[in-house]
Image (tube, rainbow, N blue to C red):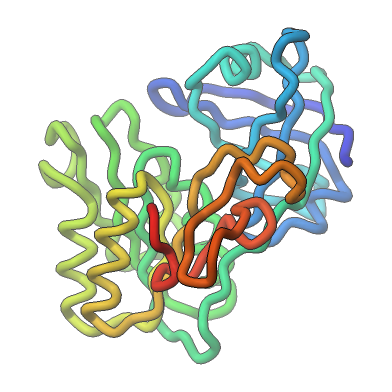
Length: 256
């Protein structure tokens, strides 16, 4: 359990906010791909916390940055938080990305609010000297996040696609991901976003003979394996996303 204070909470795209909190112990403990379970006070009828991935952690300054989409009452209340607001969270939750040893070039594929965990991974990989390319998708240009962040990291290829064609390629980021994988340039793929998108990325990675991990979204009601509401059907049986995930070996996922 970590108490935290809001440092900033700003809108960065249509319906998407960047929340920066002060939580020094958490900032030192988080690993790319893990999540936190946040309490949002204000409604006594809403007992569950909100599970969210994070985009960056700064152990030196004790801060954690989280990008979230406003999709319900709790995130709506969260979007009204101002600097100085306080609450608490559980974390770090689950286990994160595990790029295979010897990886030289990775491809990350993020759709919508699935961008933050793969951006966090890309930063970590590049700090370790591993080259990263990115494919990013969103419904429309107004909902795109992370494009400039990937470019600032130094990614050689940052491919953008939108459903309506208002930014980048008209279509889906899976198209550019499939084209890049077909070049045979990658050792590892990481993806997060809608299930149908991740399934297609996993299939393309398998066809190219490339290891692939996927961060799955489930309703992590408790966040520590007690309630079984976040089960994922895998080839090894039902596994809770909050403890066995949220990052899974894509070849083992049965139901996306």
